[in-house]
Image 1: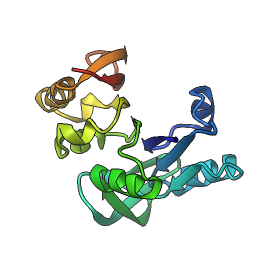
Image 2: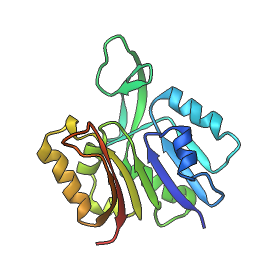
Image 3: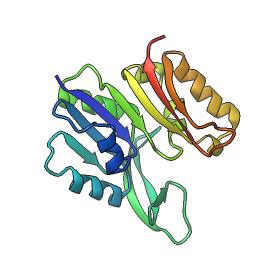
Length: 185
């Protein structure tokens, strides 16, 4: 039986190797809208049939949108002097449904979100039941992009069904911090 890991927003190749996610019994599905990031991952894992790189964004809606590239920076929001490309956008529900259908699973096991601010719309627009399909989640938050109340509502929503295993950073001192969550309330 395979364990499926869905990553929204790719980490670096070194981070993936450090997390020991490239194993025979793990299927890794990476979603990232940045073409250069996807290219690096496809090259790094070209000989591994269990690693799938999909150049798409995940947010709170399905469709297509403009996406702006400025070196390693990228955004849905216009960046001055940036290259504009069209990308496909999918919801978390559609990503999970696709993984379940493709691999014949009840649900994926792990969710990694490193999506530069889109974590809040994803959390806001999905039910807690959608997140409960995952046993563990690793979420990098960018609380400075949102009002304190909106950010806290997202944390409280996840706390209904997940325990915080680890927390890195502090939103009052850092521009971002990370939660590692495990299902179990």
